[in-house]
Length: 245
Image (spheres, rainbow, N blue to C red):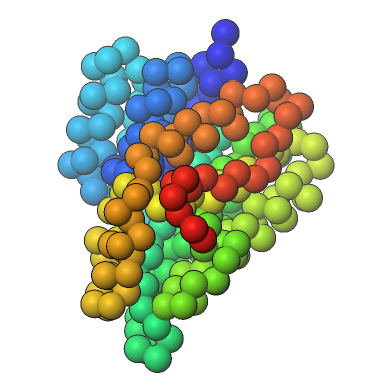
């Protein structure tokens, strides 16, 4: 039997991109899914598709910047399935711009979603994982969590933070909670759609011409979950073969 089968997996940012592709892949492996995102119509459509194909999924709308909503997502998983085995902290934003542009509202938004949203997810699942003495937290960082790019300073800072959070979970796990940090490069998602700075948008679009499919990251997430409980895949960097940085 697959190590994924019957595991209860929460996925944030599940309505599109990496989250959606991961949900579909894990469903085919027999996972029980709890899907969270802001766009209810897309969440419902994904959930209906998974269930109609023999999978098992429920959903709840959630804004990861609201800790009460993130906690409610975890509570829904516990009420429906009785446990939480895996959290995939996937929700994230990338509104790139040089610091001189002083897009402070966008800085705040990235910090709220990319850092605080991850921490709210950790806070929501860690108590139950401690109680069952088992669990797995998978955080989506970025190549930008390893290398700083001009025009991406704040985004890079948030993704360096995610990498640090992942390592902190590992070190504080007491051998109970697995921690995986996955750092994608250019992947075909909606991530570049919300870049308001013209030059930064053009730079990102140029980089993303060689973007790989979301299924590349879904396979990596699935691989990490599939390992036996004594094996913790801590770090993966996954990018297009042609991507230089």
